[in-house]
Structures are given as C-alpha cells and as structure tokens.
Amino acid sequence: MAIISFEFSDKAYDVLEKVAEWRDVSINEFVRRAVLEKMEDTEDLMSVQEALREDDGEEPISHEELWRRLGS
Image (cartoon, rainbow, N blue to C red; front, side, top):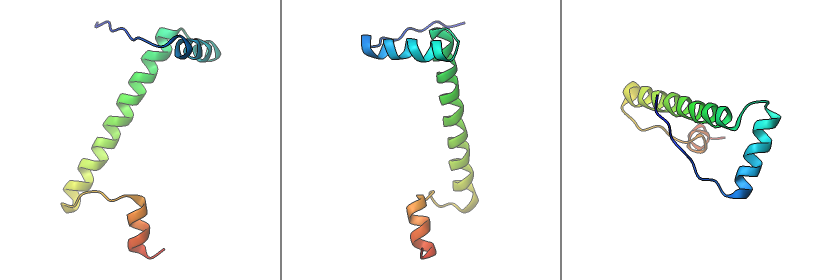
C-alpha cells in the first residue's frame, strides 16, 4: 500500500475537517474516497471520449456545438 501526504492551508484544512465530521468519516477516509471517486469519474469520461472517437473518427463536440448543429 502506498502512502501519500497533502498540504492544505489552515482554512482549507478547517473546512475539510468540518466536512469529514459532517460525513461521519475521518479526514483520511474522506480524502481517500474523494480521490478514488475523481479517478473513477475521469476514467469514465476517458472511456466515453475514446468510444466517441472510435465510433466515427471525429473528435467529440461540446453540447453548445450540438445545439448549434441541431438549430436550437
């Protein structure tokens, strides 16, 4: 198991401490879950973008561009 450390400003740490307490978890557990959730979200996004590129060979477009193309 790897161990990492983070540096937070005093203000950010105070907020982190309050949020973790509100969630009824330790600060360590709160940060661990947040990082793992962000990693999972990023992997999901990368998978979708890759599938879109493989589907038609074009780069994904923004939702604004989609609406523009649909004429809405």
